[in-house]
Image 1: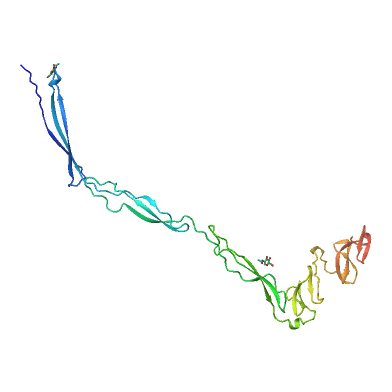
Image 2: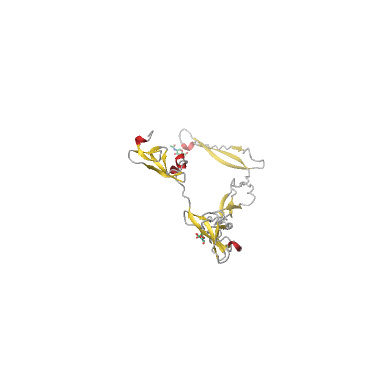
Length: 309
Ligand SMILES: *[C@@H]1O[C@H](CO)[C@@H](O)[C@H](O)[C@H]1NC(C)=O
Ligand SMILES: *[C@@H]1O[C@H](CO)[C@@H](O)[C@H](O)[C@H]1NC(C)=O
């Protein structure tokens, strides 16, 4: 008896549906099928194997995905509108519809993919050129060169390059910061103070090292030589009193000098004496000499003749 071979084909359809839980109900389905064979073999010969086929379908719910914009990134920038000082720059920003990209019939992104915005740019400050301050008031170097009859006076004034001060490589002020001028002063007529063709000297009102000398009707300012002062009594510059150093200041007049004597003992050293002049001690103490002391009677004497010495 001939052995018949049974080939049994069994088909079964399995539909598995997998849902995307977040999807809208309008979502479409997308399925794929997959065939699967199962081979069962007999004892003796492989040809006796039976093939079983099963078909498996898996379905997915496919929902539309609306596009979303990415963040902006800068894709360009113009040069600054000013080479110095505050300026404006335009920068271009771009975005793409990739966050997420539209899919499955979803909407594409709305709006422009590029935008521009102005930003401040200030690369470096502009140079500031210097500017002068106002001139100061005129000031005198010295008083008028004449008391009356027209003299001259030298004056000066100054200004400063600080209005504004040069900065950021700006130019300095040009021109002088100090100015001199000479003006006429005391133009009033001297009259009787300085009659014409008369040599006359006038006292300075508040500076005894100066005086005025009349010259052709002009009272001209003159200076006394150093260490002298003007004496209207002498009509001349006279030696000024040199102050006596403190250690040589004479003691107050004592009885000896005031009695008309020419010499007086040194009260601190009995071997010395002072000379008297007009009832006052003058100069320094003189020593009497070896083994001598000054006798209060008015002369140098042996020490033993001088009591308490
Ligand atoms: C197995 O079976 C096939 C056909 O069904 C045949 O051609 C073959 O010769 C056999 N082999 C053996 C070893 O039996
Ligand atoms: C102005 O006068 C003073 C004093 O006489 C002198 O030192 C100075 O150089 C003068 N300056 C100018 C700019 O003339």
